[in-house]
Length: 331
Image 1 (cartoon, rainbow, N blue to C red):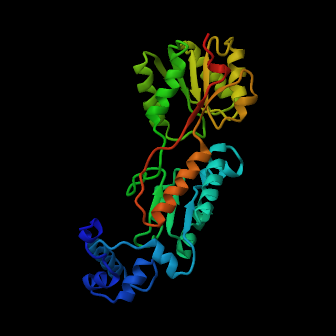
Image 2 (cartoon, one colour):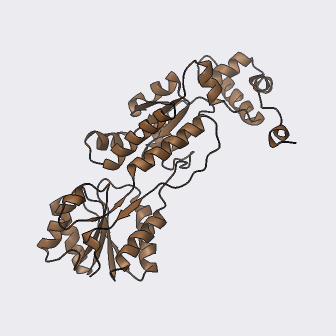
Image 3 (cartoon, rainbow, N blue to C red):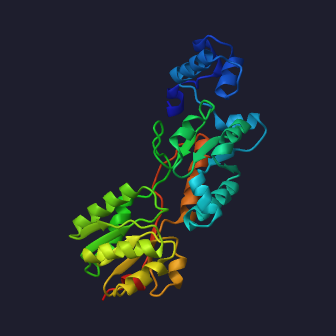
């Protein structure tokens, strides 16, 4: 006997209606997120759907509407600002690759901010993607149709992150190994204003540094000359000889180190977390750790489309790439 036949018939709207003691039309309206039913009836219908194991078929839902599969993307204002001002090549590239990949898969994409999120959902989408660090309060206020798949790139109170993610432990090991090859002993992590999940990065880097016998120090900065000068001054007191951080323009970091009598990579080796553009024109050329915005957008779109179509997917991890340049050259 096949696995499909063992599973038994798929639960139907009629079965949900029987358990909820309402009509199939009421069940259909409630699970589609349409109004008309009382809050008590809506809760009874959703409870019955969960009890019988009913799942909305996104493919059938899209077919019944006479349209292709639709992906809705909620971009929080913090990420939207970085995209609009081109402060983060990572997010610009991720969104570009997401839309292109979804289109190649025959799917339409709607991208909105918090103010338009509910209207987008009400218009009829087959999967919702929460891109970036979305405010949990904003998500809690959304009225989602029962069974609508949601892909979140960050943990939320009722929804653990379920999008492909970067393995920070592997990234930290890669960074520390690069420094260890030139016998560095003191690592400084310098998160900038646009960095996310600072605590997670810090734990991973501290653990990797300890494993390699390196001391570890965190030196936050505001990504301007004055704050970098203060951070580098603190680092000099701790005799740091390796820096990993996020900088909008790595040239400012190099100039700050030079003004403090430090050479790169002679005295200090540097790796910048970036997309690999700005550091290519700085002197010396900066070793970069790219979080691969294009690659992340492609795999995120693929996962979203698979979930919209009710297909089983593996979570996997997001790509990254270390490009070695002059700033970590072995002496």
